[in-house]
Length: 333
Ligand SMILES: C[C@H](OP(=O)(O)OC[C@@H](O)[C@@H](O)[C@@H](O)Cn1c2nc(=O)[nH]c(=O)c-2cc2ccc(O)cc21)C(=O)N[C@@H](CCC(=O)N[C@@H](CCC(=O)O)C(=O)O)C(=O)O
Image 1 (cartoon, helix red, strand yellow):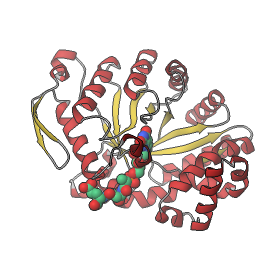
Image 2: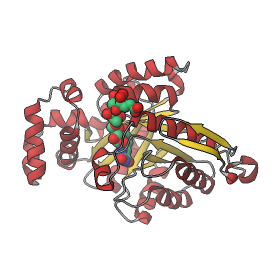
Image 3: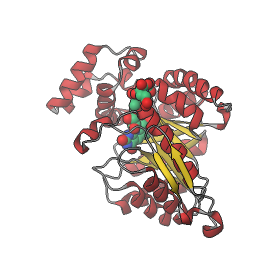
Image 4: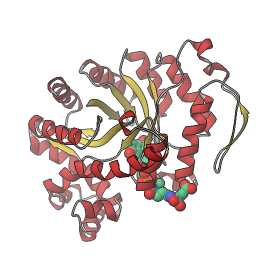
């Protein structure tokens, strides 16, 4: 199993670059930068990371089909890929519906929009003139002049990963994605996802073994397990509050639990959340604990079919210490 790490660009980019270099030096193979309109811009951030590292792969994790046109997305990831010497990856998902309201975006037809953007970008990255006539995208003789590998010497046929959680999105991802970034931290989530992914891959005549199944986890590690739980629980609260009924049912969390947690969030009662959310609840939506506990969970996820574990926010009470501890897990995995 490979290891990745997620950074939210809500901190100065040079700080994220230092963390990413630390992660590269400790054996992480992927760094994923989230894309929300209210944080620093994802491609600018990845460009700086590209200049500060040598081998770690750098992904938009994940952008969406609504805040940029597919041609701008293709030009952005291709530009970053040239700077990174061919280490860029495009991750694309339907986007966070909550944030779209502020932008007056409807986020409609998410399945079609994500699938068509992935297909159109893949064609644009050939550097050829392309026409694409889809449900949500129309392009006519569009061409990325610089994407021709003969001009840049960089292979622009970069991997495209799909950020997915819902059953139809997972099925589509199985048909279209080189990898799938699944917001989940429990083996049961990946056993359920595998059924949808397999369905989509089979329909597209693909072998699931060729798809990188990435667990995009809420991760919190510290030598003091209690501190790790305290750091993770507020993040798991947001996950539970936004989770679908089917997901909560799979993890034995009632609608009452969800309402109580959402209530505590809206009151800003993060102290109360520490008791409302039990350790077992948190374990359902995050990889949490000391070295041994996190190593054990990582092995369980690998057995459930995960091929890349992405350590996501908060990483733990102290980011640098967490990167070192996960680096130890990587070296002993
Ligand atoms: C749209 C939604 O898909 P989903 O996979 O559950 O999306 C939830 C999240 O994955 C989505 O919000 C992501 O963008 C969240 N996300 C991020 N979102 C961000 O905005 N920024 C990020 O940086 C980010 C990172 C990220 C990393 C991993 C990951 O897994 C998700 C991440 C959904 O409801 N899907 C359903 C229904 C799909 C649907 O609407 N179908 C309609 C429409 C059909 C059509 O599209 O034409 C129909 O069938 O009629 C399903 O998959 O079954």
